[in-house]
Length: 159
Image (tube, rainbow, N blue to C red; front, side, top):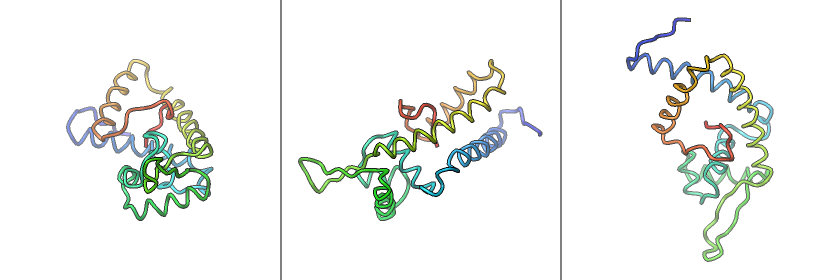
């Protein structure tokens, strides 16, 4: 493989594309066992709820990048599978908050653990002295993309 070592924009883009292909493959393998239970979009919805906590429908739709109508249908399916719960606000019963159920949290945790294990296996091949640079670069990349900082729920997952 021909790895570019310059720091030009093209080299950086090529490196990120290469890393993204690896991460997509890792993500696909970690989701393989649950593919019959949830779609990738539904899983992303569960991850957003795990990362950001309970959301109203509009906020969830925006975070996932879908329309409110699509989010409604997706949440209907997730609620039917008992992966999320709907709760009405005490002071305004028209306001509904969506949250992970225990079953949904367990599913996210299982997939995250699988993904983390595989990423750990890959990182063992990275020279220890290069890991600090990798951490800094990936953190900067996530911040630039607007990702929510890691929280206790994720133990290293971010899609």
